[in-house]
Image (cartoon, one colour):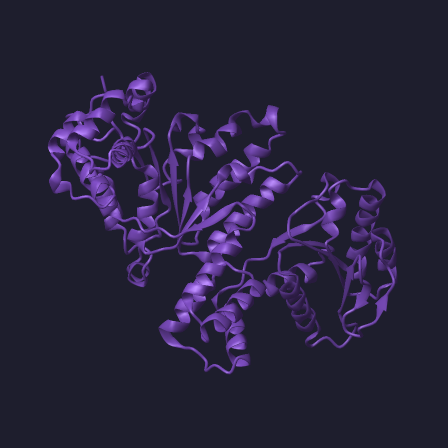
Length: 505
């Protein structure tokens, strides 16, 4: 990142926009940029100046401050700075929510003048906001979250201040992996808290604090998944596909020359185990699971939606290798079709940026998206290259329903051997896995009220009044099946998939 900024400065860029939450780290890197620029220079040296609305204009080398609290005033003071000056404008983006035309014009003038005087104006903000008049004046740089080496320096500093010996080997790798995706300040706090709570550095404490940090903006959430392939009844082909790729992110796979898998899109009838499969995927790969609420990406402020997507991508790539789960993706991106007439094209731009990232990403982020109605998604999202595979999950066949009944009964601490599982599977033809679970839960409540254990008769009484989704929405289910023919791979083997997969009568 330092080299990139140096190249911009040497090339004469007079407007830079750095997007980061880490003010202290960015300022430290800018000081390193100035030091690097001054190395070997015999003439005029570069100098770094910083401004904030509370502290005014500061010469960072001399420590002198000038009372200058108005944004127009600091821009007027740029002409008084020596040549080869870098001016860091903290939080200046906040003046662009409702931009003052005079401020925009003055900033544009100073950038044009700065090109001839070797001066650079650097805006530092946690999100990208630029009025249209300034969009082409600034080079935008997204500051990536700290890498493993930088987190290691932070960890060593905290451990050293606490009198702990330096940690090496696998233990060091595990601790740094637990902190990946945090800012340096967040990591420093998590390391310190771990020492206070445990007397040493513990991955569980650090991972817990990372989960809280990632959750702050409401876009991403770290899911502690305990699900495995054994939690899923059926879906043999999908399971087999996942197992073949369980070591795809290992060092051995990289040395073999395997490309990192991109992800998979799972569509099908609601309640058939799509979300469960997403959770199990992370367990199979042995990777952390991030859940993205795609709908929350879209915000009301101009530029906020695009900034939210950048934040999601930067966080996911910092935590990588990881699984990124997008549940019901059609609810987040279906609006991109009519975006031009409804939101000024925001949805289309965000959607396009997401597709570009999916196509070109090099970080090992495995995307698992689920959709109940994939027909709502734009066709460009479905083409090969975005995903490794598109899967269709249908209503469970009898063999699968047998497995599901065994799993659900055992889940609620009952012995499946005490029930006629084959008859229960036959009686729930046309039911989804989620509906089978709900049937047994309802039977548990009825049995609890009668102060007895649930029996086949208790379950049968529930089934009398239970109307499955395949009957309530028979037309939609039929439509999904017709769409999937020739477009998606069936998650269940074809030789069994054509039998006993009827819609409930």
